[in-house]
Image 1 (spheres, one colour):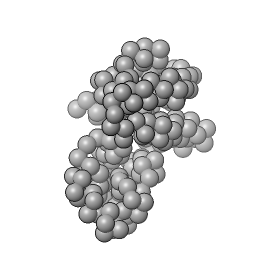
Image 2 (image 1 turned 90 degrees about the vertical axis):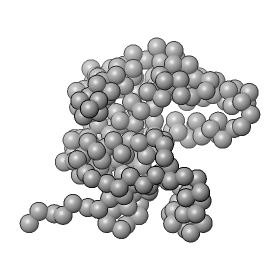
Image 3 (image 1 turned 180 degrees about the vertical axis):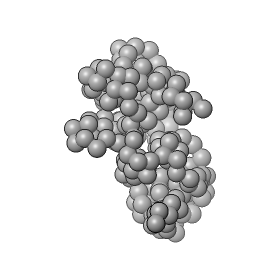
Image 4 (image 1 turned 135 degrees about the vertical axis):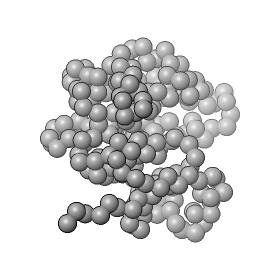
Length: 207
């Protein structure tokens, strides 16, 4: 007998943020899900109730089981879609995981202090340090991985969960969405820009 499709709900703020890559991966996997979007009052109430296991979102609820960690959610979504977005080859999976964690964790954690800084002068100074340090190192690293594969994606022609995360973050920079970080800094990374362009042109994304 065929396995029943899981009942899935994704909880996050009404914004792209850390949940957007999971939303995209679930849609690409053809998996229906409830997209629960919180305002800050909702978030505060859930936190006060102890409904957030680690005190943060996104959360993925699968048949009533509440789980956290976006990278784990992305791999789960890939498996629901038959594994197309996550390679079975160990080395290719390692490449995907390494690039994914570089953008999803290393960069996000490095950027976080400036997101909470209210003084614009201090925020911009922090962004200069972020762009010259963690961002430049991450971009150079992943640029080399894409070049190795021939592009346009991390593993060549196959879109992976890492490509989704990378493309969304590169797109944010290209759109000028981060104060103090000029889109021109990406000119040194043509493969990263090419990955983001290929992602946007992918029929399942563009459509």
